[in-house]
Length: 518
Ligand code: FAD
Ligand code: DLZ
Ligand code: SF4
Image (cartoon, rainbow, N blue to C red):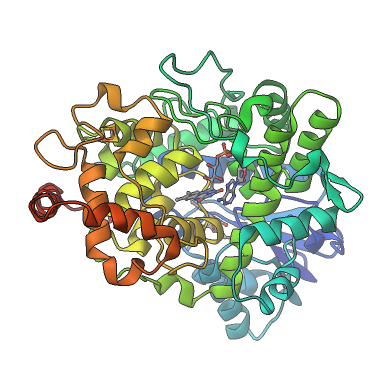
């Protein structure tokens, strides 16, 4: 017989922090924690094996951490026969078992999960206290206030307000270094020589807990995409802090300059690979920002690198979360460009002659990771140009990336990369031809296609589809001032060229078989 419970604190798989304010009034003598491994979260979209191991292993490590602190943790194990397989059924099972006086939870990372939680509490006629997720640097209330009287929610304005509010990289009222933004310095590619030797992110060997999870995932989720061969993600807070130190020491200084660069066979370049541990809450954004700012102040990293990095974390990351929670649930249905195609099968397998796509998808299968420019300007761009349904692109993203959680994937994918929201996240679609990929990376030299060509058998599919995208979406995009030049260039093409582009685009699309999983 379990002892009676005052507050039952539900900790979801992406809330692995005892620094959260939901824990502030936790009394180990009276309260208990509930964590649930459930089949449905691993299958409601097919999920990469690395992502599954990451969540389950990090959850189990956190469970043990809490137990070591003396907390009572009720843990639903996926392999336990009593596990009912979904939050919707597990929460009632534990309520019936423990009869808590109140349910407490940190704001979930998904609208869907919040709805399930509210329904479970209502059905059980139980008080539910949802506590603000103070892992984040900007509360949802502050974001709402900031957004409430604005027509245009430009990131730059939000970012500056956050820098001022937190006093980060500020010299009185002015930005350190004399500018808010050093993007001009941050657009280098590696040129013909390719990248120098760059130390890869710190690799973590699987311990006993992770080994057991790997075995479970291999046995149970045989059909899930991806490979577990090289699983080396941090899964504890201690490891997350080591990963941060490693990034600051070896890669931060060049993060800015090469932020937009790509290179074949180099998944990480100067990127941090900290999104997973941050999204799981093993480490907080203010800790990361402080470490980067200290590196600048101590002379280890230049301002363009540190400002560029800080902008991603206290700018973009907080901003997309604000967009998500102020726009959901309608946001998920947005499809401004009426895109209606399926995700092509090669976006799962990487089996395509397009060298850039093959490299990025291969990397996804091996690491469940692609860096920002691959996401936006290779895989996202291709889906946009083909016209895949934005929500399907998001579902694919949730399947393939270890760091995807609804609040961060949906605005980035549906909004920023697919222009599904019609201009909330981006002032124009991130549409480009193969020339952009050629300029920023080295894929094209080994590709059977030619980035400059739009028609003919050797034409780069990105380039053909780019012009086709502009033609198809003319009525919705041509009045966008930021696209005037693109439409002028399209209009300079002869009728014969435009016909040839249309025909080749249709052929390319006809040849794409539908997705393997969705
Ligand atoms: P770095 O390049 O080292 O950047 C540092 C940190 O900045 C990241 O760890 C991340 O926490 C933050 N960051 C940077 N850009 C963004 C952004 N646009 N939104 C939110 N945080 C940002 N990030 C996710 O965490 N999960 C996602 O599901 C996700 N989906 C994306 C989908 C698309 C189409 C695009 C264009 C971007 C997406 N991002 C997502 C944002 C960003 O690409 C990843 O955070 C980043 O690539 C993760 O790698 P990193 O940790 O090495 O990042
Ligand atoms: C992604 C994921 C997976 C695979 N499994 C679980 C799980 O078993 N239990 C859990 O609490 N969370 C899991 N998650 C994360 C959820 O899908 C979802 O992102 C969070 O609950 C949102 O707060
Ligand atoms: Fe990608 Fe086109 Fe370059 Fe090939 S030519 S690598 S498809 S951009």
